[in-house]
Length: 238
Image (cartoon, rainbow, N blue to C red; front, side, top):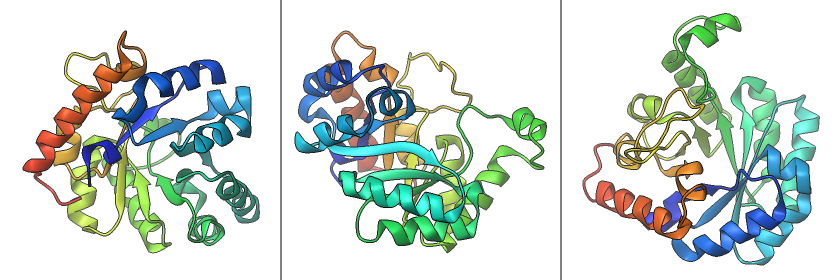
């Protein structure tokens, strides 16, 4: 896989004008652009249609989590928009995950979110989940794979163990990517692009280190260079 195809740029901006401006500035330096809750809530599905119409791949990151029938309907609607990837919460359970996969059909890749990258072990205990973050992430990843999800979303800190335990044949998408020298922000579990690739990640989601740079295209190309170098001698299969 080309380094460009592995990079997903998060368009976590307040409106379509800024989103389209960033996408234009970044150009061919990224293969996919993520539309999350902020942008989708502000602009609705039209921003997705516009990005798809401009021949850009869209990762719709709305993290669906509801009863199976409702999630299936949402996934079907997202497929109609032409998105390439979308997220659901693995904690929705097997019936919900299977409904999502069935609704997606041969369309978008259904990615199951394991544990949010903002959470740590103390947060897990606070919401009543026993065990450490890594244990829960592996548990959710195994569930998602058993339900037919073609990929998962997990912190780069847990990617290596999950790849080692569950093997190849499914995608690992890692947010919380911070090139050397970048601020962690509100992410509790982060890694550099190279470390994430070596841990077995397939796709990397990068937001502020690219979109907040004075030259987003140059920042994206720097991430691509790090991905490319890491892919030459990966420590884990991806």
